Each structure stands twice: as structure tokens, then as C-alpha cells.
Image 1 (cartoon, rainbow, N blue to C red):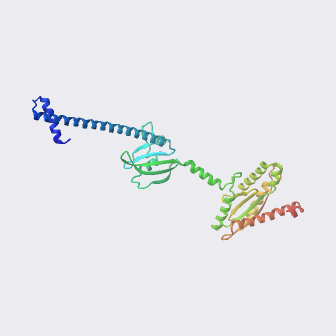
Image 2: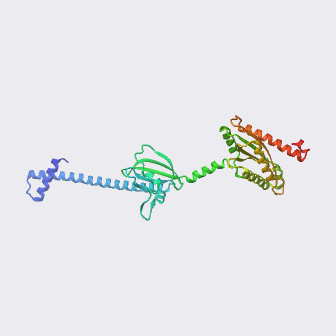
Length: 340
């Protein structure tokens, strides 16, 4: 409908309202006006239908968005990570999921109380203009360790930063524990073979002179066979305690495996080391356990600047240890020496 048609229609309506007498020309105009009015009514009806359809579409879209937002919030609340959204310019907290709210929100005051008192929240509020995703770990003053991932986005038409935060304190503690246990003997608590080889190599690389002592528990197999493995374990633990008590702060003691132990005495000559080992032997031999106990040992002095490998040093001490064991058996029973 053009502007001219609309003008004609309005004039005819005006004439009908004023009840002016109609002539032939007027009747023709009235007929045109009625036709135009019909077109107008039809166009108006179509417009109303379109508006109602659009209104329904908008309602459906709003309901869909509402369901989507509800689902999104539900998903974020089910996450194991904390979700914190901060406004980029002011650092204001725009949203947190339930886990983060429990950590950061003061329900008594009805506000986010963290800030100066919480270094993690202070750091979250400080990020602005992130061009790329940022990943980092944060350790707070309570020795909690957090892993965070932060990136920029638009949040309700505001430039914001979303932070996904995970408390990894237990994970890091567990990793540290496993790292320690990888170098510890479970039965005695001493360092194990892996730790021993690494320590010997470190001494050689750092050119620290030391005496390496290989120690073997005499008769452990016989005790296991006659009295049981619990008695054998008791024997091993008793020997390990004797080694710990004799070792100084800078000495290194480990259970090398089975019935073998290794002790490293840094900056200590062989004679001094052998006196310490003899004292350990006397202490173990004097224990009243219902079965004989003693240790055989061999030593090798590794000089500063040697190019000897850890295996070579161990082999030399091991060889001397077996000479010591053979000699002891020959003294107790001359005939037994021929059978070793």
C-alpha cells in the first residue's frame, strides 16, 4: 500500500464518519477505499500473524536459552574444578560454580570476602588482556597447591577472564611420596639399590673421596629355612638399625638387596671404616635372638678424581667381602673352607 492509497483511504473514512452525501464520483472513491481497506485489513492481519509467530519464536528461543543456561550451570557445578569468572577491567567476580563459592564466598556477609586475605583470588583478579590461554601452578601460604587455566571471553557483553582451578595438593604430595619410595627399601626404610648406584656415581662425579663398604648377613638363608622368614626379616631389620646407629650425618647407608648392605663413608680411610664395621659386627653378634648372627664385609677406598665406575667399585668391595667370609669360615671350621 502506497502513501497515496493510504491518503485516499483515510479521506473516505473521514467522509463516512462525517456522513457526507455520496455522489457517483464519491461512490467510486468509496469503493476504492473499501478495497483499500480490505487490503489494509489483510495486510494488518498478516502483520499480526507474523508478530505473533515472531513472539512465539522469541519465547521458544528464550526458553531454550534458559534450559541451556540451566544445563551449563549444572555442568559447571558438577565439575571437580573450581570455575571463577572475573571482569577484566575491575577484577569483580561475575560468577563462580558451587565448589568455588564454598571456597571463596562468605555466606554470613553475603559477598566474596577473598582478596587481600587470599593470594590466589588476588592473582585471579589481576589478569587482563589475555591473548592466549595461560596455565600455571600456584602454592598458597597454607601450602595448598593449585593448577589454574585462565583465558579471556565475553561474559554478558563484558570482557572477562574465566579461570578453571584444580587443587592438586594431594597429587603433588603423592608424587613426592612415590619419588621418595622409588629410592627407599620398604622393609628397613634405608635407601635402596637404585639410590646407592646414583649416590656412588654422584660422589665420583663430584670427586669426593670415600670408602665403599659391602656388607653381607651371615647365615640368613639358614635362618629363613629353620626359623621362618619373619625371623629372617627381624635379622635384616636388626642389622639395618645397627648400621643407622653407627653411620654419621654425612654417611650413606642402603640395603643393596636381599642380605646385602652398602655403606659409604665420605672422607674416611679404609682402616677407620673397617673399625666401624667391626663394631657393627660385634653389636649384631651380641644380640640374643636364639640363632647366631654376624656380618661379613669388604671395603674399597675410592680416591678423589678416580675414573672408576660404581659397578667396578662395588665388584671390588664384594670380592673382598667374600674373602672375609671365607676366612671367617675357615677359622671356625678349617674343612668348610674347601667347600665355599
